[in-house]
Each structure stands twice: as C-alpha cells, then as structure tokens.
Image: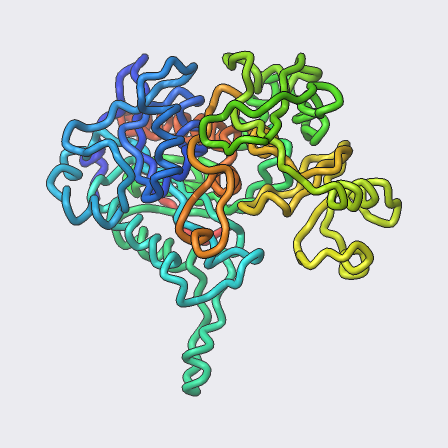
Length: 453
C-alpha cells in the first residue's frame, strides 16, 4: 500500500466518520460521538440491544451528540455482520474513504476469565468477520475493545490429546497477524477504564490499528496513538473537572432511595408491582455530568423486588466487618450467608465500583440491601442519564444465551467515557499522519516494532 493511496480526511469543521461492528447497545458509538465523530452505520445482531442503540443514536430524537447518517442501501434493523458481508459486498466497497474509523468489539465470553474460556466457542471466530469488514471498507484506523483474556493463549487441549505440540497462540495474536496481512499496523494495550473518569475498575484490552501508509508517518507508528490516548485522558478529566478516580458514591449517591425516594415504576417494559427510584438533586460533579440533558423521570431506574429475608441477608453483609468491601466475597463469607454464587461483590462507597457484568446480582449496593438498578449500572459505566435503554430488564432460563436484556446490554458495553477519549486520540493521530503526508519536505519514518507493548 502506497502513501498516495491515502484518502484525504474531511476538511476542517467536518467530523470523521465511523462504523461500529458488534455495537451492542451503543457504548462505543456513544463515546466516539461524544468525541465529535459521526456514525455511518452500526452492526448488532440482537434486537433488544439494537433497539436501544436506535432509540438514542438513530431515530431522530434530540440528543447532545451526532446521530448516525446511515446509508440508504442498508435497512435500519438488527443485522449480523456475516449477513451484511454476504448481502452487501458491493455497497460496502462504496464506503472506502467515507468511513475513516472502523470500531467494534467481538463478544468476549470465550476469552473472559469470568467465563469458561472455551477454545471452540464460535464467538471467538467473530473477529475474522471483523477483519473481512476491514478489508471491504479499508478505513484509515480501527479500534477494537475486548477483555484482557483475549491476549492469553488458549491451551490447545485437542492438539495435546493427539500428542501434537504447538506453540499456544492467543486470539489477539491471531487478530494482529490477520490485520497485518491486510495492511494495518496494530497494537494492543491493557487500559484501566477508571483512569478516564469511569467510576469502575474495568481493565480492558484496547487494540488500535492504523493503515500502514499512515503509521509510517507517525513517530513511533501506531504506538503514537496510545501516547495521544494518555493526552486525551488528562484532557478529559480536566475538561469534566473530575478527580483521578471517581468513586461509587460520586457516581450514584443521588440515587440512594433514602435520598431520592421511590415511586411506582412507569416503564412500559416493566410488569406491574415494581417500584423505581424517584428523582433528587445531583450531589457531585460526576452526577451533574450524568444528569445533563435528561428529563425529570429517570429511565431504567426500576428496583428489584427482593424478599424480606433477602434484604435482611444483604443488610447483614453490609454491616459485617468481616465482609471486605470492594472485592469478591471469599468462600467462607459466602458459606456464612448461604450464598451459592461464586462471584458476588459488595461495593465500597469510597472507591470505583467493581466491574459491572451482565448478571445484576454480581454486585451489591454499598449501603442499601439490594442489587443495582439498570440506571445505576449505566451510571457506573459512564452512560449519561439521557441515554435510554430498551427491551426486557432481565431474562433467564433458556433465553439467557439468546436475549440481550438491559442489564446485559449495560454489562457488555464499552464505557462511553473511555470510548470518548479513544475517539479524541484517533482524531489527533489521523490529523498528525495526514499533515505529514501533505508535507512535501518530509519522508516516511520507518516503523520497526509491531509487537504488543
């Protein structure tokens, strides 16, 4: 690929454009849009998750970010990435030079240490579809988010059983190898979301790729994007007037029922008989940021209906000095309270929350005997209150692996504040690279390191 192949970026004042693959409810899209980028289209197979994305970023609702422009040839519905590749190959090729950033994070369950890490999990192969889309659209840059486990090699048990010794290779290694073949220089680093104003301990693997013709014109190549990400992190905290770490109390103390009160739930997706958190004034800078642009009725603030004995058990855990807050309960503590779940964590009010997962009963509120609401979980992920969620609140039984209700949507999402900083960093990196290309007095720098830092 030659430098002369590079399509010019938009002129000053025009936003960079992106497409989001495996978009979920739109956390990554929202963050990139908050950074000033404009979405072209998003791919999400689940109808509930796509309904949430559409309600906020597609349906013409008045929101404080750019909404998707959406190509006329693509039906506005829940799509699988393989279906779009199969049905619209020619249409996708028309997006070359128009989609500057291709974003997306394939489902992480097959990589996650919280799950079973099954090597043959078909979801582990979805990154191959991501690579196919990169080939079709040829964006200037790409970004992919996943759990840190994507960097850890699977053991290859099937080969070992046959007596064949192969060097273990992680799916991250396979991804880098595949993207290198189609013309991208790629680097992945573990990033701590809590350093970006996200009130949550959520380490994530962020993979950034630049087309090689652009990477050759940046000092340090694609690693320059991570230097710019650190710059955007500092800039974001200063702009939002946030501390280095935002605590759980900073994030959701205004939603404590003793402070905000409760009322009958009015959400159209909820069954009768539920209560929801009412409204109260913001108590912190972070809460004011989250409340900006939202109405007087909180979306997705429905409270769980715990039985009295469950509430009593939760309150005993909160008051038990032997139950350490902010980390997983150990086996002795779980046995003491008759808890069969292996992953359950009592929040610490003074620290960022533990990682929000797709299971609502993984985390207990720091002061009230209950699990978190969808809205509180979304706050901890850095979704602003104006961002509304659609679909069921929870699901269970055989539907758990087939549906993506609200708690799952939130738990699977990329924190928007992390995504916003990534969007700012990529914008800066592409601007630097394009300015270098435009200069007639400079020559390409040679980038020699492609290995992960």
